[in-house]
Amino acid sequence: MDAKQVNSYKQQNSLLSQFIVRLSAFYEGFSSDIDKELIVLRRHLSGTPNFTLATVSINKLNRAIQHQEVTLNKYASSTVAKLESAIKALQKAVFDDEQLKKKATEQLIALNQPTGDIFSLYRLFQHAIDLHQNALAAKLTPSLPPQDEGREAAKIANPLYQSILAELNQLIESYAQKRSDDPQLIDIKARLSQGMDEDGLLKSCVVVLRMIVQDAMSEASLTGKVIQGLHSSLDKVSSDLQLSVEDSRSQYEQRKASSAEIQSHIENIEEAVHHSESFESLKEYTQFSVKHIANTLSQQSKNDSEGHAHLLELLSSMQTQITKLQRQTQTYKKRLAEQVKQNQTDPLTRLPNRQAYNEKLNHAYQQWQKSGQNLAVAVVDIDNFKRINDKFGHAAGDRTLQVVGRHLKQHLSPGDFIARWGGEEFVLLLPDVSNKQLTDRLETIRSSLAQLPFKFKQEKVTITASFGATQFKQGDTPDTVFERADSFLYKAKREGRNQIVSD
Ligand SMILES: Nc1nc2c(ncn2[C@@H]2O[C@H](COP(=O)(O)OP(=O)(O)OP(=O)(O)O)[C@@H](O)[C@H]2O)c(=O)[nH]1
Image 1 (cartoon, protein in one colour):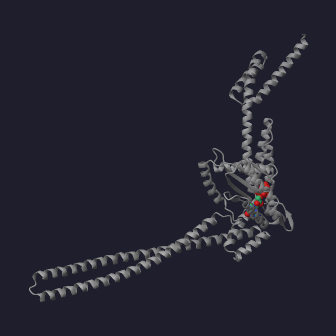
Image 2: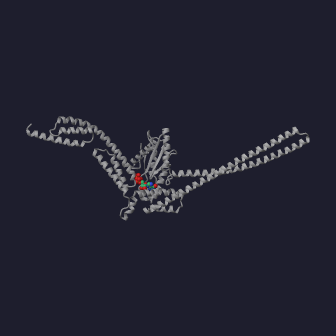
Image 3: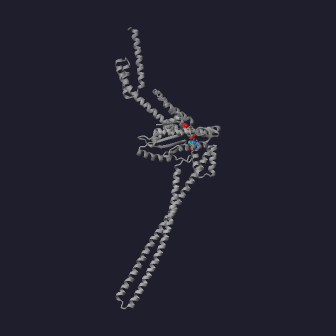
């Protein structure tokens, strides 16, 4: 080897050493063992490189880095899972913002692709942070743009406006049942269907709130009146009872006095029998005593019948009061039952509401824990429902909710349960079905719903829904089951809607 070749080798060795030193900087920070060994390696490669010692160090690092790769993969997939659940939560929070919702869906799709290198994970993070920042900015900056012509569009896009609108519609629906001819309600309903500006919306909210307060107050005063009525009936019964007890006591005293009187007359007759000197005087004395006895007995009988009549009078008065009490409590019980039912009924679809579902689910969950029989939960969400509202108006949206609710209910078995979960989402409880029966039944509902002939403004419209369904499994709670069904529903939406995703 000539001097030129030696020089070239030296240069290449130095280049390689510098490269390894620089590359080693990338792995720094993974673990303290790797960091220590990297320092050793760099020492062997700096100055005049000692490749023999460097090789020993490289071998040690190789093993450590291989192990580190497994940890890194685990870390990457748990990070992706956390990102996915954060984006799902965000997707729900921005459900009214079409653009943000679309971005969130794209992000969810990206998260479901293989992660590849560590940098793609960084990019996913970057996107998720951007998305959260956008959502935050959208929530903080409400609707109104500077130009007036943009007002209308911004109003429709404003999620706060939309949610107040939906809330107000629901409130009105519940009051429309009770006060179908209230002119204020009729007016608000009509203006809502034509579209209302934000001022009008707030004023209408105030009107409806005032109605609710009035209703609550009159309900409270009615309850007060019923309770007052119960009190006075009970007071009357109690004073009648008191009288009857006092009457019985005085009757007893009278009877005791009469008996003592009769007893004394009888003793007097006995005395006369022993001591009378003539038949005549005995006869006279006996006649006198017998007359007294007869008087006392007749007085006693008079008292008895008077007491009896009084007692009957009291009993009949008590009977009347008790009947009145029974009637009052029955009316009150009926009102309470109606109120409980109303509190658990969704006013628009007349289906049980979320509160009723929670109660039913807790009961079914306890049964499931005891019996171990299958119990399935299905979440149903109408597809692209916002478009119906936007294109045909809120009233058409409401009508759709009613028809879909009725359709779902018609297809359930007697032991099943349905509730409106909120918005355009329904929840079903199906006890004692196998996985196959569950999907078969949901499939029947799904396909028949897609064939229902909806028509708005002379336009035929197809309404479809997506379904997420799951069975209770060992270790499940009502919350975990609902979350699983909900995540299946999101999957059904992601994969194109109008389909069922289940266990
Ligand atoms: N008419 C009417 N609309 C409601 C009611 N409750 C919620 N909404 C509206 O339902 C719409 C739900 O829209 P999104 O959550 O975007 O869902 P979607 O359009 O069905 O889209 P996907 O669920 O992704 O298929 C919102 O515009 C709500 O304002 C209601 O009681 N009546």
